[in-house]
Amino acid sequence: MDRRSRESLTPTGVPAVVQWVIRIAEILARGDQPQIAIIDQDGASEPGGQGVRKCLNLLDAHSSPSATSIRNPDQTRYVLLDRKVDRLPCVRFIPLPARACPGQGPPLPSGGMLLWINGPFGGGKTATAYELNRRLPGSVVCDPEHVGFGMRRMLPAVLRSNFQDLPAWRHSVVELLRLTLAAYDGPVIVPMTLVNSGYFQEIVGNLRDDGFAVHHFALLAEPATVRRRLGRRSLGLELRRGSWAVGHLTEHLQRLGAPEFAEHIHTDQQTVAQVADAIASSAGLAITPSTDGPLRASLRRYATTIRHIRFD
Image (cartoon, rainbow, N blue to C red; front, top):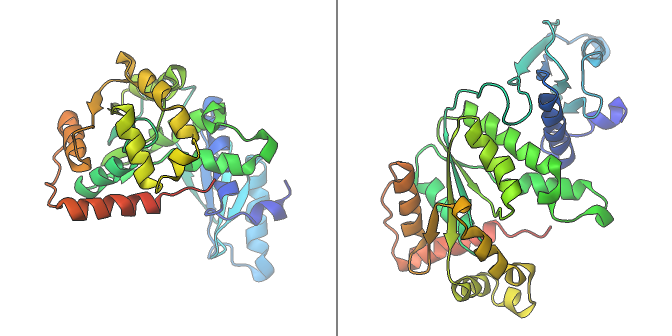
């Protein structure tokens, strides 16, 4: 990729973000210490942009070949470096933590707690995650699907399949959550269906091995309950079309019922607010009381569903 095409990618564009996520994971796995360099536009303000060009030339020898330079709308340049370098003129550095392969080396100091909310499609993961987010001060929702669907969009249509089968996705999720847990003090909420025991160990297991506080919850319900919820959220379309979620429902419930996916929360007779209360209590977190009546709770649940409809 030449510099012109690289600079056309902005931090908010999915291709640039996903390329950086993958590249940072590769650098960390190699045992090097990546850095992000920010070119100081004031210090590089020579006529005709010569200062910026000089800075880019200085950084080229140290930068990642797969996703070197991206540019914000305000013309700020960001450069991903393969390794730590000494100070350069007109450049500020943001170091990223050095890290060997997952599960090796000393853990980063943990500032936050991870709440992984697992369950079948239609099991209430997203509604519960945002109920917790609303009622746990300082919490944040980190959805691994954003990385997965970004990777899918990068791939040719003939190569698109279940993004969880991509090693790059699993590796990227681990590293992004490590960075978040090390730097963020509040609860980190992850709503994500994960039923493959190998993938579960690769992501959740490695985070636990690193010393982070990880609480995993599998939301379970009778198949009829989940089908009713799927039908309600899609106006019956998912049931009539025989969707992938319905076709794999029994298998997913059986897998998630295994001891390795504890803690199990059976949600058939519980509201979203009650499930959030149970999760917070188990994790030892103080949650603000829910004051929603049935109507408001229902409207809030539908609003959350609508905001998170995906067309990928």
